[in-house]
Length: 205
Image (cartoon, rainbow, N blue to C red):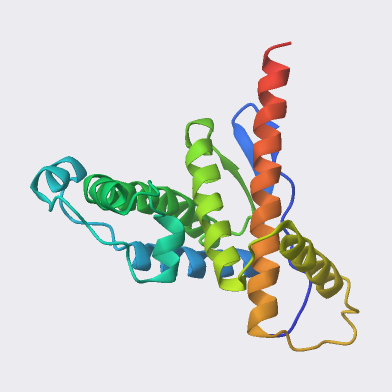
């Protein structure tokens, strides 16, 4: 993939919700990541409550590293963690999948239109924030980001990539692409949260 400017605009609080603009290439990358994550989550087909009632009393931690990130243990005690996972994992898989699907549907609608600008309805904003956080965690796991210094490193790498002279195109590695998307998703999530907080402050004045 050749590097060129990828655009995400800041979210703006509007009467109808939270408005932003997204570059087509970024939207495609996010849709791909959403699809991969939803596939890994593999939400159960049974209703979560019924599944919890009928399921086993204990469940082991998943082997998949992405699932370990998205569905971490809820207790440091192995036995208690196993019991809690049996009770909650199916419901959490369903909830996280539904959140990602909300984001995916909005990006699919955008792809079908000529506009690159869209609005997140206020009733969906916390689903978006949670879904974007899950995507950020998945990307951080792939990059082995575990400390603030690791995040700063990728922010600096992304800034250098985006500042690259477009007249001198270069190939971008798979790791650089993941790092760039990690930074973009993190920044977008922070921008949306800030817009929500500013909107709440303005409405209370």
